[in-house]
Amino acid sequence: MNPNLTKRGFIRILSYFTALCVFLGVGALINYQAAQRYRQNSEYGYQRALSDLSDSVSNLEVALEKGVYANTAPQQQGIAAKLLKESSDAKIYLAELPLSYEELSNVNKFISQVGDFSLYLSGKISKGQEITDQEMDSFITLGEYAKELNGSLKDLETTLMEGDIPIGEAQQAYQNLSRETQDQAVPAINSGFREMNEGFTDYPTLIYDGPFSDHITQQKPVFLEEAQAVSEETALTTAALFLNEKPQSLARGSGTEGNLPCYRFTAGDKSITISKQGGYVNAMLNSRMIGSAKLDFEGAAEKARSFLEQAGYPSMKESYYVINNNICTINYAYVQDGAVCYSDLVKVGVALDSGEIVSFSATGYLMNHHTRSVDYSPISSEEARASVSPRLTVEAESLCYVPSSGLNETLCYEFTCSAENGDRVLVYINAQTALEEQILILLQSDNGTLVM
Picture (cartoon, one colour):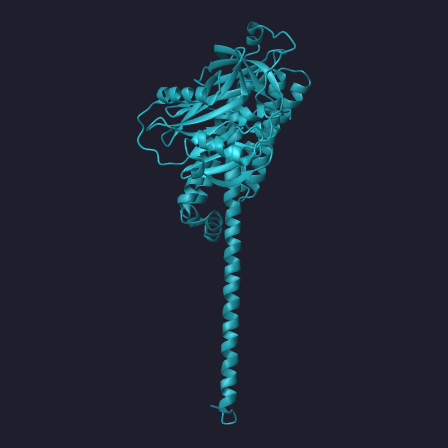
């Protein structure tokens, strides 16, 4: 110890040194935590970009498949616009991934070509020109590659969730390796992107010059326009009756506002919302555990039909259903004068272990139900059928009202068709103009039927 340094001075210096070490340590910890947060936020951004890219490519695949069956100018123009939007979105999400252009050059080229092709078709349709058979074949080809790309992206998302190295870290580690070892490094992420990119090197060059339900919450409830407001006590009584519970056993929850204001009540695993205007049941959910299935779809549909009749919903037709976790959820639409009103939608969930109704939603019905009137004579079904693509074989037909993006409805002929490749397709032809209003592709499995 320096003889000129007192004991007190030594202690003071030691204290300063200790404080400096603590300060530097805390600073390092703060910087480390900030860096960790930055890496986490970056990784979340990469994951979101990959997920959004996958969604856009999935939408491209669907639009390309529908484009094969579009047979009138307005529908073809709509398909072209959809393709342009989704290809533009896909390029934005692709650019957000921490990968070089070379690693995704072919995928980028494919997406760009879909956008260019859609622009070319849009311009051609605007001039009143028809799409040729060769261009239709291009739709098919692009659709096949979009399907392949979509599958690759889904696999990459799964790999990412199961892997130990995040996208950002995998990319950094890959770039730090020598060229001789890059091919063996981080195969879970980067090799997946490279393989996906290499899979798009041989698609042919194109020759060219250059859900029914989403709308229901965007308007005011038509069915409740003339209905009177009800008190919470009246709504409580209605809820208890619907749930087969005593009113005193229900707890009051926070209600909902928006276009369809509702009271909310709960009783154990059950929850229910009652419209403040008119006092109608809007939705109900029983979240109890569901046991092994004892009913099939037919048994569930019988239970659902009986329930709807007792609940005061006459003239309802089954449309599509899905079975998930031993609950069969069936969509029902109101039928007026033989025409199905797809906007007037009711969903019923049946537990397959007991046949109990465990979910119910009448939002579509409350928002849209009214008496329709047609002020023109519809064209014949034969005239409408002539607008269906010759690539499809019509198997059944019926009249229906379908919602439009402008929150209106259109009377259409619904044609259930089959395609040469086995696709099941629904084509909706305007009953006044004979133009295509909508094309939907049916997805059928052991668990039900959905549309896209």
